[in-house]
Image 1 (cartoon, rainbow, N blue to C red):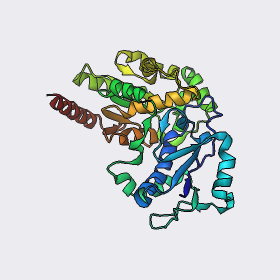
Image 2 (tube, one colour):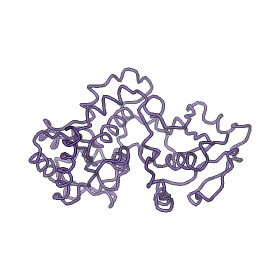
Image 3 (cartoon, rainbow, N blue to C red):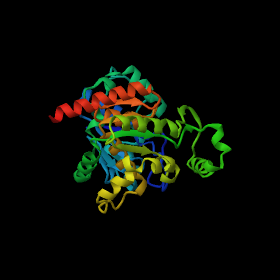
Length: 329
């Protein structure tokens, strides 16, 4: 049986990071999906997908990736250099140019060599992955079934809202001169944040209008709020809507996490947050975010983006709650 060695293009050692709110987890998932889809749909799972623990610490205790093995950090060099008594030079490279028409030998070993920025190529030119009734990411589960169930039950009737404020988001110039945001700006700099034009900063007031409008339709509605900065930088939102918001911190209090001996808090919190958002009934997504894409695709639920017309969002929400009532009758 051959091996598809799937490497993180960033080549980060995530086991060495102590405080990072953006670990690129969903970028890594979509990267892995290409290997999973190729293996499953075209080679009847004849390959073993192999990843490195240093690049996938979440696989130690937190989640399972189907048909994928994790090589312990201390074994990575020995395993990959001596697999089947071959040397690393004998591995065949898979760059972004390979297609489903490129035959692979299931007795040989391959190593991925393309960037996250190349993912668009695969999703554009190999659209069958997007069009699958069930995508590989939908088979991903938390290893602890009890935790998975508690999270699902806690958020299944909530509206999911993704607020991105961390790495990559383009901060308005006015925030740099506002002393109220000085700590937030400093935090972003420490995280290696860059201002990227495609990641728009959506103001608190946009979310206030969204929450207020939905609550006018249904005063009992609660929301799951996912965010990528420390809680203190979400104070305006959390203080104003505390009674109707559920966050990863609220879910944490319901879960027995004592069994996680190897996992760092940031990885545990990320998995709680992602599966919390992914199991809500309706998603208000942040545009151009793999975190939001995963949350939408995981259960193929209805979604809108925060920049969509508010009337359209409310109309869809009303249809969703009507359908929910009909199913319960």
